[in-house]
Amino acid sequence: MLRALCPTVAARYKRWTSTGRHVLGLCVPQWFGAGDLEQDARDAVARGATLGFQVLQRELGGCVASQWKVVDVDHRERVGAGKVKYHSALSKVAVQMSQQLQMVQPEQVFTIGGDCSVDLAPMSYLRQRYGPRMLVAYIDAHADLNAEWETPSGHFHGSMAIDRFWTVFFLCDA
Image (tube, rainbow, N blue to C red; front, side, top):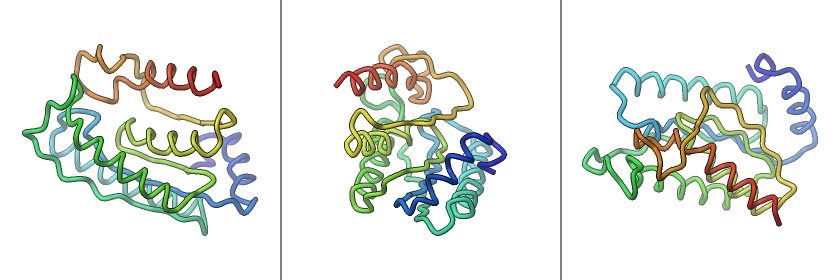
């Protein structure tokens, strides 16, 4: 599956995993960053997460692979801090991911997620580990063009590009 996505990435991936580095594959099927989804869409996210986990297990070989369970969402918390929906659920998953990353201490992380927020904890962990030498290969299905305070939908997944741009700018400015 990874090889089919991009031959160049696949070749580098083979080199990375053959070096004996400690690689962690994370499959995080949360959907909260996409806002309110109908049950069939939530089911599709769960099926995609299962497929993603199988791909990580197969492609990463003997590396650690971890599949997260979807956090129960209290729909009364739909509107959270600021304008972002389900802020507390998103934060809870990010904290749990951070704790696992600190415990496992991987050198590389491959993440498959149900929304864009699942990359924050791995990127933060890797930034702490590697500083400005950190490299990220980020593949997304759509453009994320809003800042958190501008999001017209209130969905976290629409807020990543500008936040990421500023994060990368400040991270690499060291």
